Image 1: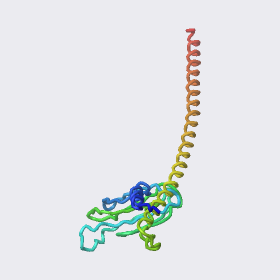
Image 2: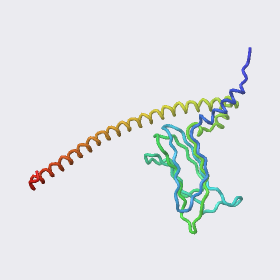
Image 3: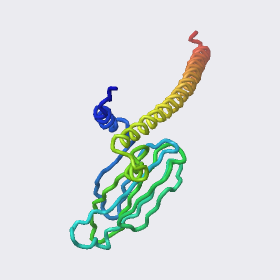
Image 4: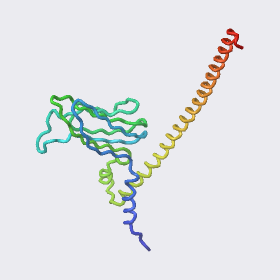
Length: 216
């Protein structure tokens, strides 16, 4: 009996996983006191999303100043509120998106005199990237290769769902284009009719004017 070497399969899964993963945003930005900065993410329906944020301590080894606080709100494109942190220094959120669309995370730094600039670390993951694989490995007591294969399987399923989602969005855009083209067609006909009517009235007015002046 010939046994296949599992390492090439493991290497293949490790190589393909980054291309199959869902969205991940990890960024650091500066926020001046009294100002707001918003970050958006397009999330499809029923997708899991997790995020965590914290204010970077400008003086390592010392407590974070009490003036370094932010207010954070996460909302959907329909205005539904999914997370709210008031005057916090760190926080996290996790939820399953109830509706598809752009979700907005807005950070507001409280006013301070004199003005200060805060540095914020923000990590936002959706889809397969939001799954805690370390807990999956601990609970299931599985080896590294099986864990990577499970990641790959979930990533492929996520891409399959993403393809259907994009197809639905494409159909919506095509329907919108057809409706817009139809409206433009009728608007063009109306514009042509108005132009012809105005030209006819001008000719009638000129003819009447010349007849009164007995020029024709």
